[in-house]
Image (cartoon, rainbow, N blue to C red):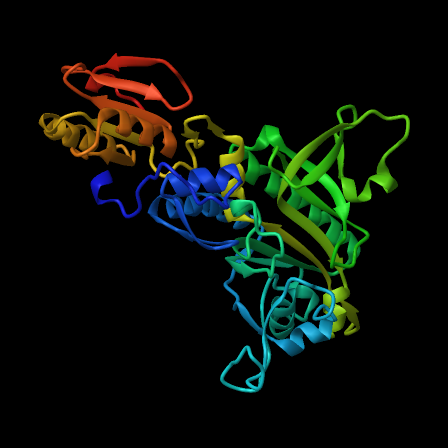
Length: 409
């Protein structure tokens, strides 16, 4: 990809109202564009990163569930059946035509912030025998929350990407077995994203769901809005919200800021009972379905990756989610033919290259943009390199000259 043809360019400044590092760097780097508070457009660089994050999540979720795609809009009565129409205070609602927020008929709709109200009646149509259980389905979709504190870039948005998975089991025991399976799958996701050593499995309150406790996957991060208590001896951790219940007076805890990137909830029978969803056993008797809910926020993960992987010059993307594998810089049009040969060589090996072919900016600007964008490997062709290639890794200060034959990314 020629940088001169890339839609979206770098900027020396970010919007004055953006205080979060992830928002400042992603906007300056040309990855996202701010539409309004809590709402961002993903430009080509940003979309490539988001897609790589979602593909890693998808690959792990395909091992434990089947993918679906559910609607963003829901009729109000589904949320009324579960009682959450009055308890979830971040819902976006479209009101009847006789009010100031008009739709084309008298129906009222909900913009889903989560999809238990949608997936439960769908499952009820198809899976009612004990032979159908257990099963799990997931989706990756855009969600909406009427968030009152949208001030942390991609860490807290009103419109965001979410992977939500729902499990259906015959008993509480089976639910707990799948809960452990989901936990392990989540651990693999965050390890593959480069966050293994920073991610903690944290006990938390049940929130809008039925359980007294749920669990969160929290990434240690100064920009995080959560506080985690961690016991290095037992490896147990819990959210500040339940510290009074779990904290032991004679224990010394590590206390740090963190950002939630995933959560898992045992729903038990709250939603199945609300919709009358039961299964029929071998004897023809009916029993309630036990459910679980499991979420990961891909767009939030993207923001967290920037928060934990950056330096004073810009972003430092882990290789597996970087928008390109290599950032090639040419200093002088006379090196373009050689650049094309190197790109062809790399692309034949499946290596994706962003080529800064611009001739109207200085070398210093090219290097600054390269550091800001944060692609793992920088290659430079210039009069100084002669028939060699200058090679540098983004996280390193060292450069070396190599031959085309030595080029191994």
